[in-house]
Structures are given as C-alpha cells and as structure tokens.
Image (cartoon, rainbow, N blue to C red):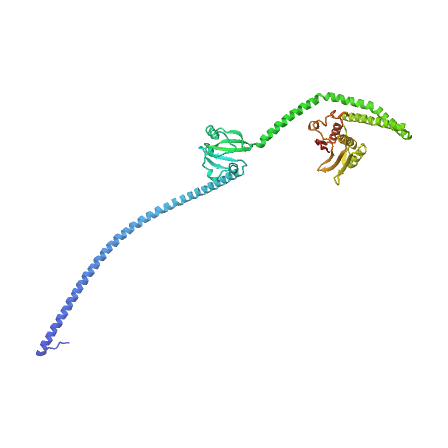
Length: 465
C-alpha cells in the first residue's frame, strides 16, 4: 500500500518520528547483531569445547580399549590363577584331610598312651636327658605324692621312697651307655621293690632321657623266703625219708616176722581166751570166796590176753597191705558198734553228733571199725583221770569228715610230728602201732587223718574220707 505523503506541517513531525523509529530499529538490529555475534562466538566456543571433549573422549576410548585389552589379559591371567588356586585348593584339601587323619591318629595314640599309663599297675616316671620329670603315671603320683607342678623338676630333688643311692648317677649311666639297669631296694616300711631303669628312645632311635619303673616284688621276696624255708624243710624231710628208707628193710622184716608171729600166737591166745571164758562161766555157778578170787584172776588173764591179741592184730594189720571191700554202710551205726566193742571207763563221757541227713558212705566197715577203734582207744588212754570224748560227723562237698575230740593231756609239738610213725610210742605199755595202723586203714579209703592238739587242753583227730 503506498505510504502517504506527509504534509508540511505534519511532515516534519512524521520525519522526526521516522528518524527516531529508524534509530530504534538500528539500535535493535545492532543489538541483535551483537547478540548473534556473541551467540556465534558462544556456539564456536561450544563447538571447540565439543571437539576438545570428542578428542578427549576419543583418547579416553582408546585408553578404555587399551584397559579392556589389559583387563582381558588380566582376566585370562585370573582364570589361569583361578585354575592354579583350584588345583592348590584341592592339594590343600588333600593335605588338610591328611593332617586331620594324622591329628586323629595322634589323638588316638595320645589316648592310648594315656590309658596305658593310667591302666598300667606300675609307678612309672619319664625323664629327659637333664633328669627332669616329663610325665608320670597315676600310681607314681600316689606312691611318691607327686603333683602336676613337679613336671620339670629334677628327679634328684624328689623325695623317693624307696630311697635309691646315687639315683642320678645310675640314670646318667643308663642314658650314656644305653644299657638298662635293675636294682632291688627296700622302702621305709620294709617292702621290696625292683627299680627298672631303661633308656627313652625316640621314633628316630635317639636317646632322649630315661624311663624308671618301680615294680613291687615284696610277694616274690616273701615267696623266696618261704621257698627257702620249704627247701630247708624238704631237706629235713628228705633226710627223714632217707632214714626211713634205710629202715625199710628192717620194717619189711618186722612185717614178715609180725605175720608169722601173729599166726603162731593167734591160735594159742584164742585157746586161752576161750578157756578163760569157760572157767569164768563155771566160777559163776558157785558163790564161794575162792571162786571169786579165781574169777578176778581169770579176768586179769583175759585182759592181758586181749591186750596181746590186740598187739598181734596191729602187727598183722600193719604187715599186710589192706585191700578194702567197699559197701554202702551207715556210719552212725559203725560208730555205735565201735563204741560198744570198747570198754569205756565210767569217768569218761562219750557223745556223738551227726549232721542231719548224713548219708551212707561207701566204705569197708571192718577196716574202718579197726581204725576208729584205735583212735578212740588212743583218746581214752590220754584221759586216765576221766574227761570227755566228742565224736562229730558232717558232710563237706565231696568229703565226709569225722572228728574225735578229747579233753586229755594234749600232745607236744615234737611228739605230734612222729605220732603216726610205726613203733613210736610215749607210753610204757604198747608197741606204737595203733595210730600208724589207723592211718594206713584210712588211707586205703583214699582218705586222710589229721591231728591238732594243745598241751593241757586236749587233742582232736580229724578223718576225711
């Protein structure tokens, strides 16, 4: 649209206004150009910074790539190291298992040693080369009053009982010479010990101290003393048996003679006894004083004939070896029969007692009656002034026991040892065969006879069959 032509009046005003607008527009343009230039410079700066950052990023990328390559190489090395570690770990696991097994073995060995030392019924002390205590058993602890703090102390400083002279020198000699030693000592209570000193050997066969064991040999010593005493007794018995052997020929001759004498005397003695019996019966039919005196005389003759008959019986019994004929027999009845066949003084009280349910025994009643007769006769002779004779019988397991207990004078020890010897007697009357025959007859029953006596109190013969 055409711009209107200003008038003269208004034209100046409009021109001034236009000039002002033009100037404002120019200033705006100038401002815009300045802003554009500033923005251009800013953008140029940003582009330069961006290019610089791109360069830096490019350099960083190159470094990252290089680092990535290094990391890949490191990763490969780590993989290799991981495999090596796994292998090492497997080896360590194996070694650990072996160590655990070794540890278990060592623990078991230690437990075994501990139990061995505790269970060993010996006082044992282990020492080092310096003679200091390493270990001791509970028995050593009890015997020597040791405590835990004694470990490490020298054995020389310990108050040992039994005391051993020069114990240090002995142990040192054992360690140096590797030669065990044994010594016997007695403690303060008189008890004997054997001290064993042995070198302490390690697993590589080195000597690293000593081991001391205290062995109680008191019983052995006592046994040696008893053995020595028994040996002496045996020598005495041998001497006695030798003397008896020397007399065996004489005894055999006595036995043979006794058999002949018994046979020759038995018949006339029996005739005398029968005649006395008939004469006595004849005397009883008359009541004259003369007959009474004759009766007493005949009774005396009968008693002497009976005594002679007993001597002959003892000689014959001892001369021949008894051969029992075993039958089942009532022992109480046998004892009663024996009592009734013996003339018992009125001053002697005889009593018998049997265990309830005492069984019958398999014996030869005739031989056993002879044996019991001799034992009872011996008891009666031991009580000339009267007394008591107690006969008891009981069963003990497989043995039957019969005891004859009198209240006589008793038997001295020196006499008791010979009481069963044939032809031994302490009495004025008799030949000393009664108890010897009794012993022989009882032994023919596989039995035994024992005697116990106390002078002034009495004697007990015990028969076991």
